[in-house]
Amino acid sequence: MLSAVAVPAQALETELNLNTYLAGSLRYLESDFETGEDQFEGTNNASRLSLKGSVKNDYARLFGVYDRGLRNDKAGIEPERQIYLGVDTAYGQLLAGKKASEYRLSGERLDPFYDTSVAGFNGRAQSEGASYGLSNLSNGYSRNMIGYSTPNLYDQLRLNAAVFLNDKDAPNDEMDYSAGGSLTVPGLVEGTQATVGAQYLKIENVAAFAAGDAGRNELLAVAGSPGVSTSYRAYAAYTAPRYSLGVSFENVDVASEPDARRYYYLAGTYALSETLRLAGSFGYLDFKPGSPELSGQGYSLGLFRKLNANTNAYLAARQVSLDTGGDSSSIAVGVSINFDVKLYPFSFGGGDDETAAE
Image (cartoon, rainbow, N blue to C red; front, side, top):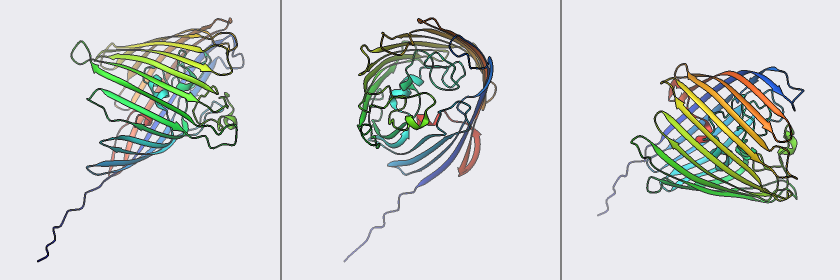
């Protein structure tokens, strides 16, 4: 006698979300080495549209992201920010496409001034990206990336690795790769936690980032690359309900330069109230002769106000003094609006964090 047992099909859950992030600011700039910049300037601070879709069951989630920047008034910033696919399982996450690298994200997460008009990895005026004290490897989106990250091992340890496939003609056809990890443990006081981590990045591609030259930058797989180089970042953070502290050290050893570039960054925030946060940072660059003349120190100070669930505003200032004799000062007031529309199943609400944190 034959019998059959019916096994119910695994139910699939499907979602499609559209995130809209609109951010702009008015900045006043005084600079010894940017004489062509207007003293008053309105800027677009990384405004974007992000479409995210996913299908999941009890065992896995397959997702995709298309993230496109809206019109930017700074030359050389690509409109297509991210486009990638990924799969989440109990064994970790696998990603492929154009995305923010883990090396970049390890710096971005420490920087309270990221994507504001006081940012500027090179001490100059920027409308988005990392602050002075973080390298240009903390900016941009890396192409042809295949990356893997573990789940949280023992609820504390997370490891990651990635390769970046250069698909251009020689000599820009070498493969780049990275690896790293972080350890997060409970802090000394209930509700606090401490994180330490490190990221390693090996770049074999000879092409180097050139500001404002989108065509040349297409030769790079790793965003912000200085050319053939070996880089690492060591970082730590401590977070509590009312305050946070973060510190980063980068060593960027460029093959064509006699000595490594060194970047030091310290940042902190303090909640003055439930809706008002004070932030400050200090950055120091130690570049030897033969490297770009960017050595110096920079300070940033700002107030960030949450106006409602979708809207935030800030007032911030920055001062950078280069060892070669150039000073740059800026003060900016800005606002951002962040909201989601769940296209399937439909709903509307406040925006999520940066798509890169997928």
